[in-house]
Length: 86
Image (tube, rainbow, N blue to C red; front, side, top):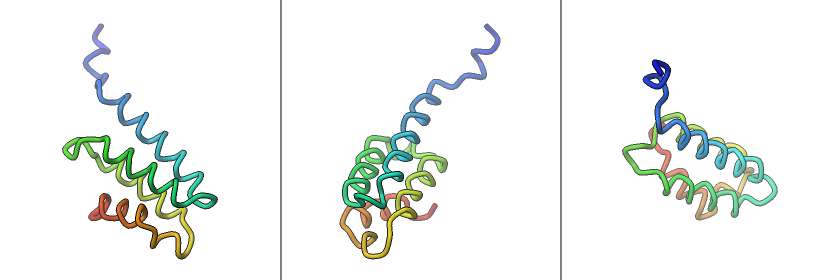
């Protein structure tokens, strides 16, 4: 059982969060409002001290997938505020 020391219990959390964010990014061009709201709810569900850079960078991909005026939507602005400084 020596391999257990290399397994982090929070790995599953981060993988699940990233998958949800990638799903939101895929829908950001067709439904930017819903994608932004989904990304914000995913990020909000992760405690601030557990928001590692890998997760916040993935959240910024949702913003990157949004086109033009969609970035001015409330959810997009909230997501940008949650990921600022990344």
